[in-house]
Image 1: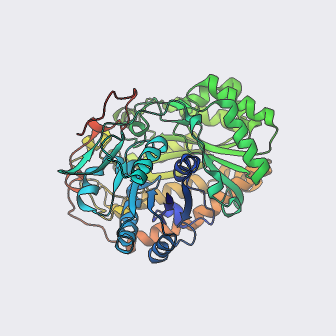
Image 2: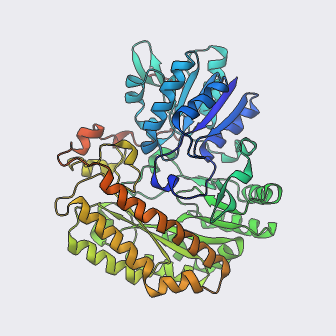
Image 3: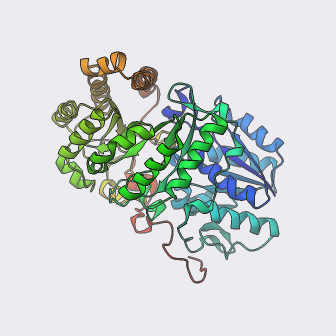
Length: 504
């Protein structure tokens, strides 16, 4: 079967501003198994350019596919673009099967199938095995009712089959690296790069996280084979930077240490960047030298807040003292810390944001990333915030970098000023400037300069677009905008294989 994997041009700020582009790991992970099944698989990456919608549609139509598969890691804000592209493709290719996967369609399948007749089926949860079965059924003309983990349009309307089981052996499916031309993808300031994934899910209970329930259960790849794959990509394709897509790759100290030691044994000069929890860094104080030796240059620490009450509200399960210690330990071992801080979990006042700024200064992170709370309907936090007012009804802006919820105490413009002021203070203080321009480690100096350069481009872009893009003063409630909470449906896959399929 001729299959096209399509990565749409994403509207988020992070996708539009940097010159670097990373390959779409999710689509490549689907592509590998489909190629191994004998299908003719190609990838169109609309992020380059970015490609205008009509040009992307022309490229898809010219490929004469029998099936088009859409997916995007930032799928909430990307959904309107996928909708526009898919509708035009179906108008020009009436017989093509359009398959849609990702986090957003996993939970919004009913609305999508009800309002978007061009969508043939939705893959819910992990896609490697489900997509194989789905494409196989479409090629053979078989019924879709017996395929676990999908939603489709049945005789009486949209329906979903039983959840597919989680993939226990992540090494059973290979990434289709041959679908990309490696020189086109870079990160960290023009260095050849890819996205990789050692593990899936996170065992912690943060109630705002849109990923936790999607993956259902934490699992990891074989540490040695994963290290060999990284080494092979470096030797054969010149890949220098490996950006980990994991929510929390360091959950198992034993498995993580085995991976670090295996990668060190490969003797490859690579740069590793990713996210983890501060408490894992503190736990691993005795092996942080292995982190550095393996190639780690930066960890994003999802601290989210410095307020103890808010930490309890969002069930972060962290402590401010642990966050500080993690940053200190990373600096001691030559690893950069990027602290994320989210505005809007609670309806802050000026005093709250001033206190948060002072606390962030006491943490002394190397880099800072400020985000806005962006509730997802399938998370428990959505129920907490469901009566708050939506001020941004353009769903393309639900990307964590735009204010989407109103606060009672501060107008949107003043919240923006606090965010920008906090960024200026944290990134412009003498310590931060010295590290950026005078750090003795040239690799870390390059990394911080690259990030600062990107920030100088994003910063004015955010301010200008804040005033250019209209927000609503009397918007709907969060529940009225998205619908009823779905936290009872948060887990998208079954831990054990179902005995028989059934429609729900």
